[in-house]
Image (cartoon, rainbow, N blue to C red):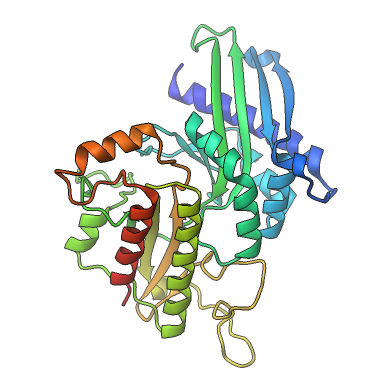
Length: 348
């Protein structure tokens, strides 16, 4: 199947499924029950024009409705963002796992295809994740807003008969309307952690640099007050300890950097304190819209949080450990300690 045809087909199937899902859960905000963490709804569709039949398994729709609600995601806005255009925008640089990423039309959301182990991990940790996110509004962890399995059947000769895709909708850490000259994916590891620039003249691909690039360019996260630094470090520690408890590893701190004069000045309260400088409970994370420093503004999030330390990762770790100082595949306890140390060392 050609990539453009595939993207158009996937976009249509996902958009149609999300519309159906929103209709199912809205406008009723139902109380959470134990069964909601394992429930799924299957929708079946047929579109003669494109000769596609498909089903969508909508995983735990009530739970994800609640997660959207606690993150101030309006149901109509969510649906419009993903369904407005006929085709999602495919991101040109997929991750090393082979996952494919798509933007919603306004780039507020990223849709990622999941491996089966990631799907199972998210479903297995969903109760703990839900409780953690609802109690920790400042969390830097990826926000998950919907989980779907598409099974697309076609009689077209240009595509395989059946395609099965597990897909999660999540927040985009980076802003939609601000150009970020620097983007980093940081794991606290040095093994294979340098971005290789294949074509220096390619201005269309947004490069994401890695740990060794960060060190080479002498980057640091520098907030303009000690209080914000303290809140940030405390939140990183809390988030990473949660991930350690879920036995996951290989996650990253995603950092986007731009000059502060490129970003709008946040409104101050009557006492002159910026709204994000508060421990008080609210439904919006202080890190969601960037943190301004003296010269730089930082967009931060902890992403790729669904990789469990299973047999493959254990074998990789045992193979590399005698030869590599900092392999990426590391037991969750070691990984979290290294990650926290790296962030602490790189905060001014």
